[in-house]
Length: 219
Image 1 (cartoon, rainbow, N blue to C red):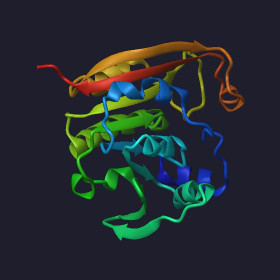
Image 2: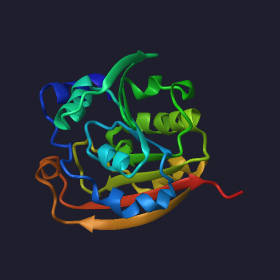
Image 3: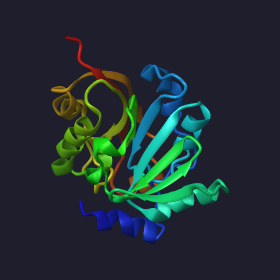
Image 4: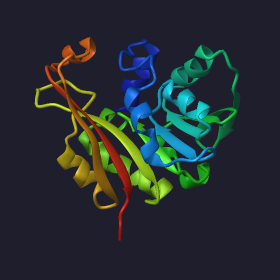
């Protein structure tokens, strides 16, 4: 999927995918990451999610990456705060207290751009990517952070013929994508019948919401 698809979504304010509230699964399962105050958590394809502010208020250092400068600007504007904006590598970098946003293409990110990352919070970033990019995405995460990390991964799956994104990704694919690097633990598997309107329009009549803990393999 071309970057222009997502840039156009933000340009036209077609962002029904944006959640106004802090994600309930993040609140319910953040303890599974065993983070300490001051640890660094990475949020890929972050948009302007308030999850980042919630994590920062818990005392973690939050590093997000987002393609759209509109989303990055909106994140800070809606909080009425002024970040320090600089240029780093191929990115526009926004910094405010313990929050850093990199504006640019995730696949241009390298380990040299970052401190040691302790965890990744993937709130439907994986399912925003088509199948030909999902393996590339996970390989890139490992290249940047190694395998000594924990990942809280939120996905959706369905048996309905739908017009994605979000792309339905089932456990078999999660095991295939992550299994060579990590242990995979399913924390939540819940069938949802109260379908959000934007997803119903895409053809969803049922959704299974999954939460996974991805962690270093036990040798």
